[in-house]
Image 1: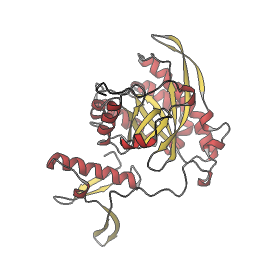
Image 2: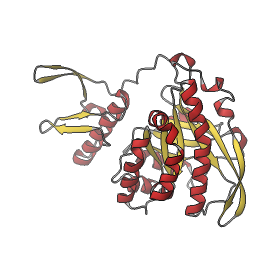
Image 3: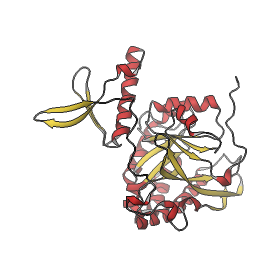
Image 4: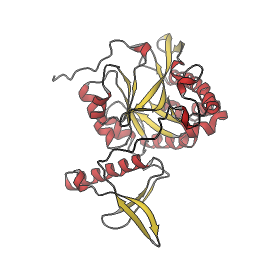
Length: 333
């Protein structure tokens, strides 16, 4: 459990948990996940009938009053969509230019490829259980086949991402934004002091907005990354942003990157995954986080399909990048 969450064991079978890093429903999901994992480990099974969860409803003298929670009940729908203007500011699509039209492109010099083209798109993030836009994500892309990037390449790409983020933060502050902004930044950049401070220094004017709105999504993590360094990196950037999430590629990555660090969410890229791979990664990630994002989903894939795989959020493939992007079939099928 990440700080400032706390828990205390009350007796042999009861634990009191205070989840301050998430809303009520996500805190409930996290507690249910913990219970299911414990039951599966100690008893070899976990069914909803075995899970007993209560929510503290009041304090009476020296005792806590609690009401039972129906863990099968869906979350309460918000009274307003996160992107509507009746939350104190104009909707992102009413900004000038609209948020989703802020696509930038150019060329970047890479160590092994020379000058290559890049694009930075801003795409909506959909929350699958409520069918609403809950955030917007910056999505950088490079030409197909450009995969072997040096640390300097990743640092240059990170600065392009920050360059796309800063004008949005300016408008967010002026227009009264009420949604989250996802910014992907590489692990090698955030884990080293010099490049990390260089990025944070560019955001000095927007620190209060960043703590309210920005979700840093750590990318290029893998099973070989030192668990202690991951934990230290998260601790270093968490005070500056709303929450920290991580992008993973395999079920092995899930265990490795989450061993000592509790991320608010985990994300996986659609492109290049097989149906079985995606399902196994999401299944492993579900044990570690209540928020599971799938990025770059082709528009022909129904959201209900990803929801059935236990994904909670998705971002569609930007229109300018729509090609013949499909999920590879499993070899057995």
